[in-house]
Image (cartoon, rainbow over all chains, first blue to last red; front, top):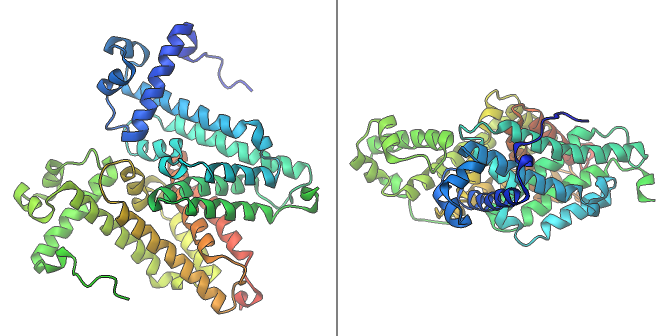
Length: 212
Length: 212
């Protein structure tokens, strides 16, 4: 389904322009992640990327536009991981267990937290008008889980009693909250526990078919 | 168990000093909550409280000390709610349902989010040395849930198969993650779903005793 036929502004850039834009975004995302939106300014981005102020202004004329693009960039990254082949469109309990193991086993996980969740927590407080962008990113993430659970129901692997949206919200909340608690505790335990228990709950709806 | 016999510095203040200190904390907490730690400065706090710079400095000589005290203040508030009579020390599934209903029904919930979680998400990125304080606050919160579940097991209301720490981490993560998702979505649904499903999971361990 095409929700918009208007091409994003940056798709009209040349190859070289796209590369420069990507370089700015990568550095800006890193700086914003490390220091927060408030503490990140043009001067730091210019120093990190080695590009001029007028060039930076050419790609992102306002801080709001830059932050919007960083959200889009982080969202694309996290959604791409979830849409990767390794998780089989989340069509089995095993796929969810692999997903949990992936994040729990990722050594930088509790130091970094979820890049998108971390950005969201900070931006919620600012005047930047980027809430729609964040809502869309988390909406797509929730949809990946919900579609997987619905597909399991369609294949008879999961009871019709399961509420796919409710379970998707549990999984996403356990991930985001677990990441935050793991960062605070400086150990992965809270994330591991939260994901394990959330997937255990999902499994209470599994049918005998799901084992086959 | 006494973990420390050293009285907190502010307990040595006179009644009037305590009141002034509380007034500063309340305003600082409000400002930090609304604008973030970065964007909150002494000038704003002086204006909001009407006290002088030297007085402010008398109570909180550094920003780190002020932020530490704000965390302690927010933690005391949220822990006091959880220790209140209305939740019966979380010794039944019903008590957990009442807790979820309390936060889901609280009209400012998704606009405000969890004050402590919101503060934690921001502070994790700063150089302020306040992580121990945050870890202790979330540790006590987790303990309230864990103790309730352990008590349910002791009374035979919950199966010995339930892992109290794991379930406490699920509940706390569902709350924190659900709050963040509700703020992003601008509606309470994600929090409601996450808490409902987490408590449903808790209930899968309930025994027949728990109904009586």
